Image 1: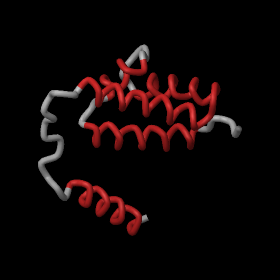
Image 2 (image 1 turned 90 degrees about the horizontal axis):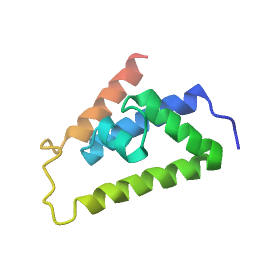
Image 3 (image 1 turned 30 degrees about the vertical axis):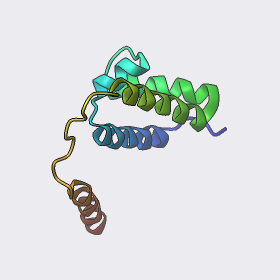
Image 4 (image 1 turned 60 degrees about the horizontal axis):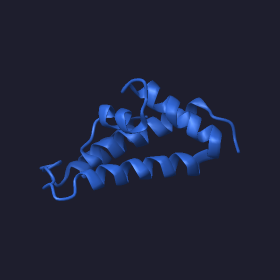
Length: 104
């Protein structure tokens, strides 16, 4: 298993932010589910880094999947709120990333 790096940390933080947005959740929601000491990103990453030390990326993925299952089970029988009223929101994000890449 390769060692934990700052690049991995930054990539994971970006993935988490996108995932939370897609799920309509906040860092506070994730912090509670991970039982982190804080809902700030460094505390969330710290929990996931411990998972990485115990079992690598599969352990992180498993933990985050169990959190998502927990969230989905807590919503059973509850109508989902409209998370994104703009159906092209994802396309806008992609377009912004493309523009940033072109300017760099």
